[in-house]
Length: 319
Image 1: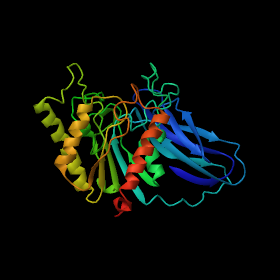
Image 2 (image 1 turned 90 degrees about the vertical axis):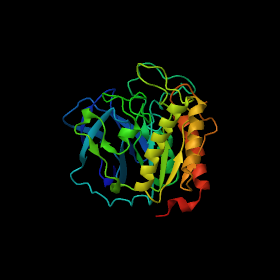
Image 3 (image 1 turned 45 degrees about the horizontal axis):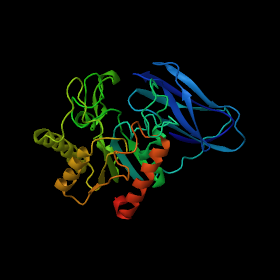
Image 4 (image 1 turned 180 degrees about the vertical axis):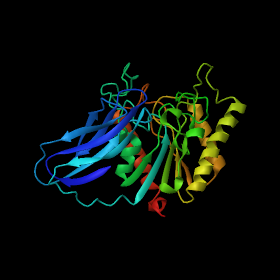
């Protein structure tokens, strides 16, 4: 949410529902980034952002820092009694969407000093910041609006990965849902007509070796490889039908993982054999860090992805 206003104070009203971890709401006020801790849940609360602003016009952007560790209803902003709400700036013409996991969601990216290392223990989500994910940075670099639908721990197949809500679900269940977990209430389908991207980043494959309580899934085993690739292609093909002009970029990230999953995605790219489907590999793909990419590593990915999308030309942004 972005609001332009006058006056000396600004606050927002939300009603948060916590599932796990510590909750913060992020904001950018006149170019300065900050966050507000949500101390209470399941009732409307007022979060005061600033109360001694200088005279003149101000711009506030409020954003969600975390994935489905929580959800909240946004009821509006509160300004001074004599303040003026200024006309909204137009939305970007370019539109992007990202289907991904915790890296795309910006998980643990604010753990400064842990570059290249495993995550700090028991961080409870305080280092999560979707605004600093490579997906969000890339969109801002290219002047695009982004739907970032990334979910930490998710894999392609149900029953695999680390995301459980409470059953382990994969992208094959979540990708076409607005609410995809029972704790969020009724499971609801997403209306794809509400947002049509020009470019779709599909960044799944990091968590897919994991299956809770069982040996790792073996992508080198032919039967499993066929099953996994078929599900992956089925999701992408459905999205291609829903977004008939969008370009798709298949990636994994710099978080360490077995390169065999990337080779399987190379095969998927070749088998889809469509000029709207692209394959991109980062310079340090699967080899940069034992833990979640930190902000500097997110920027590293964003700069490379921005350059790649720019090289594809302006045609990818055509309606």
